Structure formats: C-alpha cells, structure tokens
Image (cartoon, rainbow, N blue to C red; front, side, top):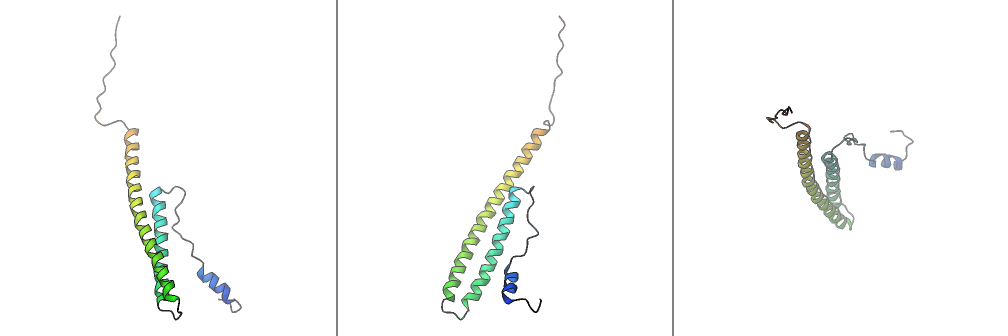
Length: 122
C-alpha cells in the first residue's frame, strides 16, 4: 500500500468485489446459469450473516435494529436460494430428458425389422 494513498481509496479498493473466475460462458446450460446465480446469492447471505453479528454487538443504539434487518434479508435470501435449487434440479432433469430424446430421434431404433421392397413383373 502506498504511503500517500488516501483512506477513502483504500476503503473503495477493499470493498470492491473480486472478479469471479467461475462466470459461466455463453455456451452454459440453463442449469449452470442458475447454479452460478445461486452461489452468488449464497455468498451475499454469508456476508449478511457476518454483518448481523457485527451490528448485534456494536455500541450504537440503533445497531440491534439494523442487525435485525440484516437477519431478515439473510433469511429471505436463504429461502430464495432453496427455491433456486429446486428450479435448477428441475431444469437439469428437463435438459437430460431433452438430450435423451434428441439422441433417440437421431439414430434409428435398435432391432428394427425392415422388409425389402417387392418387385412386380407385369
């Protein structure tokens, strides 16, 4: 850290989120996109729980009220994550079923009996 760096710029740098290396690419499936968003929400939930603990024991008179707000938001995020998990599982099942159907329609069914065309002589 540079000695002439202001405390505001240090705070700004410290509070900026680190770029995520697990960002899904353009070819990601819907289930992968949902999972990525679910993981992001879980990280926010964890930060809110930490904020709750800090605010709960702060010296300010309003801190317990703010801690309760952080706890409610964390609970709502947790419920949203649970719903996203159910959606992700359903989408993964649908994608698997789609893949199976696409594979079945691309190849002829096994053990198919084919008759030769008859030739008629008139």
